[in-house]
Length: 66
Image (cartoon, rainbow, N blue to C red; front, side, top):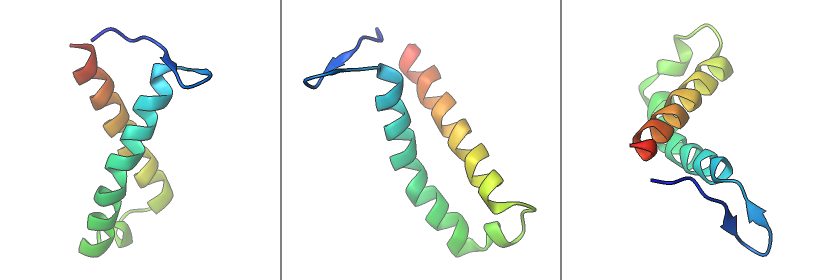
């Protein structure tokens, strides 16, 4: 995949679209973790969610780059 800008009346960087996709993918993961009680057992739940977001984001970038 070639990373190019998107034209939505303004040019949108491809990383912003990928970040939106990662955020949308994280919503069900966060709900599942909350329902299973994972967030109660971590030291800092917000930091845990941020780390999960970074993992999802980097995974999408690596998969899209191939």
